[in-house]
Amino acid sequence: VQLQASGGGLVQAGGSLRLSCAASGRTFSSYTMGWFRQAPGKEREFVAAVRGGVGSTHYADSVKGRFTISGDKAKNTVYLQMNSLKAEDTAVYYCASALRTMASMIRIPSSYTYWGQGTQVTVSS
Image (cartoon, rainbow, N blue to C red; front, side, top):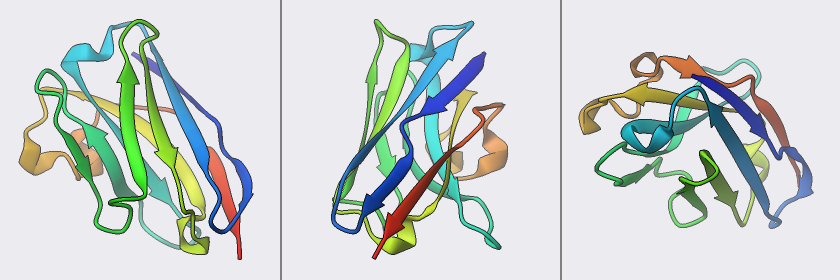
């Protein structure tokens, strides 16, 4: 599985961005697809995920109500719609995929097997 993340950029606080993660090699419908982010000097943290097969969505408390994860099976692509962006959302965003991930493990980076290259999101205050 290869993942290609895109859609990052510079946006003012309160603005929106939509990140895309295109998967190749396998259809992602049975995979858990997740978004993580990493700010300078900080550990990689969970943002959102959609669980393969079940289709349930999961969000970090810090983004709940502002970010939405969704997928397009026909395009083998998962999206992260980010609204009401804040300066603290600034980070490199990574998409990742995993097969057969339990809900209890969905927020842990080591649960994911495949990672995209990352896309920079910068929110100016």
